[in-house]
Image (tube, rainbow, N blue to C red; front, side):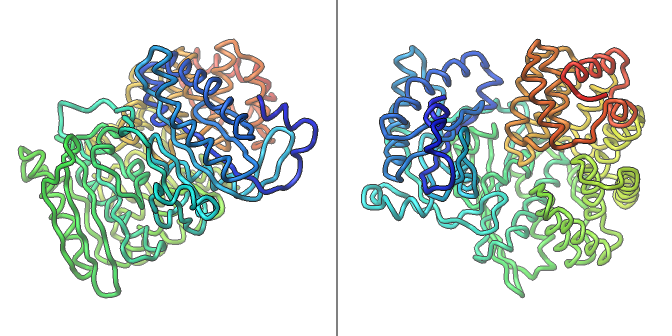
Length: 594
């Protein structure tokens, strides 16, 4: 690309200060799922007719283009901001001239930082900051780091909106940022199809008013409990907490949330925690109009928080699904702990688990161990400990696969004994029986129990899709994986959902679809080796052998001891001989060592 050509003379090598920008397509997954060919065509048009020419005009260069975004570099913050503003001004007119109703909207972030440059790429903490910042840009708008704002404030201060200190994924300290909203009418973001047959709701993270980011785990955990209780009802469609966490620290318009998540109702609120009390204020809104339906504020001792959560669940259901019977509501409510300390340690552990960071991940188990020690009858930390061990093995971080697999099974079984309706424990147990022990029939029984206990449990839908693919029920596998994604479209572990869709489509023989999902999964998390294997196999099947070998080489850098002979007798998951043999053949052709 343009940047590669300009850097080969060596002038851009080494360390230097630069303005780094990230461009991202809003709702890329939704657009690709609804019309893959047209979305790709419009994105290529915008890249070559708007983004690249404007970068050259403003003395910058596009470093690389991913499937749904662009990384660019500029010599000054002024150049980068002016480029970003010009790109956003031209996006809609360019699509209109092409004879299309504008469907692609962009988010752009700008950060000024020290970078390390090679002939073909740029690296450094500042580049990571810019990548995380773009998630907080308004659709059709721009987000500036404080470093950029301090430089250009004279030209943008009247338009800039202070976003406060943002929590950025995998970064320790909050970062202050400023938004430049779209200059024209509000940008229409792609809408997810609504589940019209049932009322649907998203419970957004409560804003932490205590001012200490270390307390975020607590406000997130309150939402987890409310969400799980609602998710246990067949009369509602409930978006998982993994997706609503994308709105933490923000005050979005309920109408935008409704469009993005495909829901009719949105609950927002705040929490302030002190040593003696917890004050919770919530509001339920109609996402179609943005109107507030009701609000409530209460202040209680920490030990009374569970009663507040239960009352909110009852009030939500009474307002949007009043036909739910009393007995069904009681069955859906999660079991309360006897110790508030156990609950608090569990929330801390869950908070760390969701980050999926290799360095901090062991800390999550330490919190869960403390929770189990405080209250040995509380199923929630036991189920999460089982999930922890499952992820520890699945991520390839374990030094003793047999020991940790057995521990995961043991914990999941114990959690089920403590609470037979715990969907996380049931789904984790089922997946482990299927993937690690190839006991597919038992797995299906436990998946059925998990979905009966919690019909909106996104992970149970997703993992059950994997087992269905293993046994050859590939059409149903795709349906289950898609339902999992529908219930958690913005999950922080989105790569996991995309990987299972790659697997299900590959098993079904839909190689082009498998390649599409595999590319998305790899873009989300290039360190997850299961994605490399399934993506490489799909690429071989689709006739893209050169790229398949590149993907295989990348995986062998992450897992150099990988051998097909060992994989065939341990982690190869398919029971159907035809699919199993096809997979092994495609992996050999991709260049994986025997």
